[in-house]
Length: 530
Image (cartoon, rainbow, N blue to C red; front, side, top):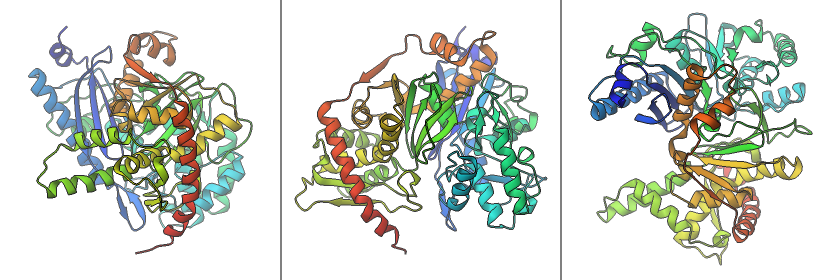
C-alpha cells in the first residue's frame, strides 16, 4: 500500500505534542514511520508574575499545527486527511488548569515553569513523606486552597494541558498514568492515584474549607494501551475547522512530554533512562526497586504503563543558549549576513567542542526562571568569569552548553552516587542533541555514562505519542509496552553511542564546582528588581 493510500484509507496515526516553544504534529504509518509533519511556534508569557499561555494561543496553535501538517500531506501526496486510525495528545507536564462546572477557566493557565507553591509543596511533602515538587498540579491546587484564592470555591475539576486538549477532542476527562503521576502520586500496583495519600489530602484540604473530594476533582487515570475515548464531531471541528477531518478516531490516553520522551527513546524498561533536553531538561530513570529515602531533588513519577521512575527535572536548559544565539545573529545581521539560524546553532555548537574541558574559567547560570533543584524561586541569567579566564567564543559557548546540564548533574549525582541506582542505557533526545556528537559527548561527561542518540533525537515527543496511539490499536493480547517497542519499533533503528571521555568528565566536574560557587552570585542577582 502506498503512503497516499494509507492516508486516504484512514490508516495513518497522528501524534501531537505541545512543547514549550513549539507545538509539533507527526503523522505515521502503521509501522510508526514518519510520513508527514507540522509545527507551530509559540512562547510562554510572564503575566502578573505567572508563566502562562492564553487559551486563544492554545486553540490557535493546535489548529495551525494541524493545518501545517495537512499542508505537508497535500504537498507530498496530493491528498487530504479525512480519517485516522488513531491519535494522541501530549504536552509539557504538570501545571494547573482549573475549571468550573460550566467548563469556564477560573484563572490563567499556570505552567510547570512557575515556582510559586513553595509553602504548599513543602507541607504536602512532609504530610505524604513523598516529594511533591512546586510545579505539580496538586501543589498548585493546595497552594490556591491555603492562600484562599477567590476562584477555589468554584473549582469543579482541574487538569493539565494535555488533559484539556484531550477533553476538547473527546469529551473525556482522563489522563495517561505517566501524565497523571505529575499531578498526584501514583500507586504503580494499581496504575491509579495513591489512595492513602488522597485520603490524607482530603483531610488537609477540608481543614482549610475545601469541600470537594480529590478524586472528584482530578481526571481518571488510564495506562498505555487503553482507549481514552473517540474523536467527537465537535473535537474534529476544533482540531480541523475546514471540516475535512471526520469524527470516530480512537484516542490514546493523553501523556506528558516525559512519557513520550521515554517511548521515543525506548527507555521504559528497568535500568534504562533518558534525558530530554529542550527549554527544560529532565532525566527519567526506570527503577528496579524503591529509593532508600526521600530526596527533594528527585521526583517519583511513572512510565506510560505505570512503572516507577526517578525523575530529575530542571526548569532551565536551552532558553539562555537561544538568547545568546539571538544576540549573535543580530550582530551578524549588522554586517549584512543572512545566515540561516539553524546553521548558526550548528557552527556555535561545533565551536564549543573546541573549548577547554572546564570552559577555561568561564561560568554561565542559565536561570531564566526559578530552579528548585538548586533552591531558586526566581532566576536571573548570569555570565561570570575569572579575571584570567580564557574568555573566547569557544569557552563561552561551551559554558552555555555545560550550564544547560549542570543543574541536572547535581540532581543525578544523588541518584547514582547516594542511591546507587544502576543505569544500563541512557538515551538523549531533544533540541540540545540536534548537532551531532557535541551535546551527546557533553552529556556523557556530565553523567559519566554512555549516551545513545537515535536518528529521531530532535523531534521525539510527538513521534512518541504517535507510537503510544499505535500501541493502543496494534498491540497483541498481553504484549507489554517494552516488548512492543523492542520488537516492532526499534529493531534495527540506527543510533550512535558515545562513552564518557575521562578528561571531559574531569573538566565537567571542575565546571560543576565553579557553577556551584557562582550560585552565590545568582542569589544576589535574584534580589535585583526592575
